[in-house]
Length: 336
Image 1: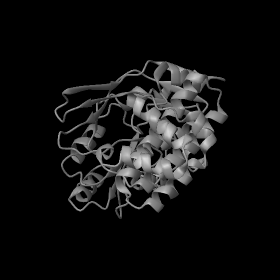
Image 2: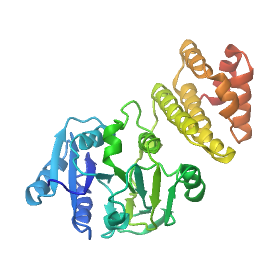
Image 3: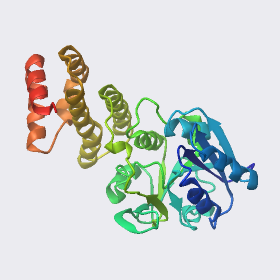
Image 4: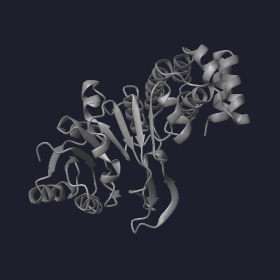
């Protein structure tokens, strides 16, 4: 469909049991000026055929097929084929309530630029039984000199890093070449979101939990999987860079600087160290990684601030002791 106002991008992989539920919920939207791009990410099941069937029967749906490269790569391919002013993302195992797209209130924002519009979600079972987790934002507009500071404080929008539940101005994405990373597969949504925020001047939020984040008991999410430590190091470096850009570009209070540091340094580094010492037996390789980490020692002294007793001991070992001794003690403490 040419000149749709919103493009919805859905990466599809091994989704033959859920994609119909997802697409049917999009077809049921009360707001109808949309285009749906289904990106079949090399699915070995019948997901691609189901996507083709929908595309053949509905002019607003396109079905694209690419070799398997992960959800981020599939979303990037969808962005490459986007022609709308606005773009949003939906996961193939989730669904939308009929008023979801309408709840972005686009009639009020057609003239806005450099903006992101957000609403919440809730976690439910496939039969929509509420599982107790939800984000329901207040209705607010954040702009002006301290807009990001206020948004992070009032609605905890720094932590709301999921790519779903948000409407993005495609021109910002195109002009600044904002992409989903293929360097790691944990927090790539958050990285995309934070990178986008570096180019915004206004955030608008609406109340409502009309996005159904569907949780099935047997599902194994990426957060439960083991990630190679070198991948986690790349994650640490890239998230650190974008968070430092945010801190240098916008005025933040001490409280917000601390929460950004905790996410980009303390949390990421703690996860990385756990992975190194549970995966790597070779002492030379471990010391190599510690040297890379300690290259930013002055930053770590300022920003690496674990809260637990064990975390504080880890900080002391890493930052105060000679590297060979630090490696021995970290191996003793963290090796599984």
